[in-house]
Figure 1 (spheres, helix red, strand yellow):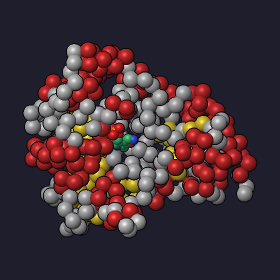
Figure 2 (cartoon, rainbow, N blue to C red):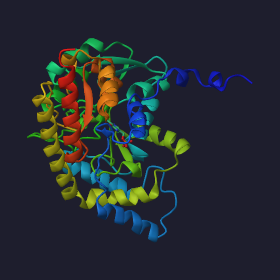
Figure 3 (spheres, helix red, strand yellow):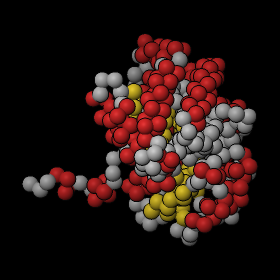
Figure 4 (cartoon, rainbow, N blue to C red):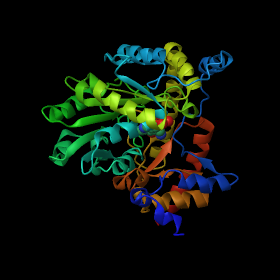
Length: 392
Ligand code: PMP
């Protein structure tokens, strides 16, 4: 028989694995290694949410749910969105509950992309957009965002990449890995470019509730005329510290949601039932828990950004998510080299900016979803490393 690698689908064969995990696999083998690497809350899921999950099991709610998700959960999702962002969605037609935001991203891309369609992807950004676009037969078109623009997507950059093949724009804000956000005015300028085109939008707003500073998050579909072309993806992983429950959702125009539901029916059936019951509780009663986690992230955010600046690294101020994205160009090392040597010499795992696109070169991603004690120790080691390599 042939080598099994040769029997794999050609597309999957050429897609590289995510660049995020590589350093943790090495770090896992080191006894005293510490990590600022993983993009997930260090908090346990708030107790009332866990209790709701346990209660659902006690009640023997152990069956499939409706393909689209429990109707009471879909209702709560619509209510939550209306209350927080002022956008109206109908629980019957406009919502699909998925296995994490990840599934929703994949489904949306596969449902709208045909072979050769161009997908606009601002980078640096989360690792899945590009591979999902390629696996759907699409052509990723990268828009390199810049630190001097606070890593926002500008209308000029967008305009310059639009062709008659452009089918979909991905809007990854608040952003992983930069922590960049788009204000309402920024989004309106993007909408001005899109109005009059047939370009669809996939807005990944999974960090929408983790915002710092004066301005609250604006949902892209809240911008005039954008609702009809936009699918917004969100989930429970980040806001409610529920990564392991694997629950997310998409809201959008019923035609696209119904196509996504068809796909979801065939490959998933329905998202985990226990998680769905727990999520109802999260949306109904956990605003205070989210507020206090967010306040703690904000404290750590200031601490880590100051820490990098004090060691002489420039660090853009992140206003969303839980990542800092300091610039390491002054060390003369590439991102990959910096991370590898930092891991070997100081036993600290962080992620090279290049894991999120070529324009992440010269930066590293450090998650501050870790305890202050952990962050403090990591900063101490990174500082010693930077000091040692300053003039090399
Ligand atoms: N979008 C972004 C920007 C993310 O960072 C992540 C997780 N790291 C996801 C989507 C997917 O999260 P989940 O599948 O856990 O909802």
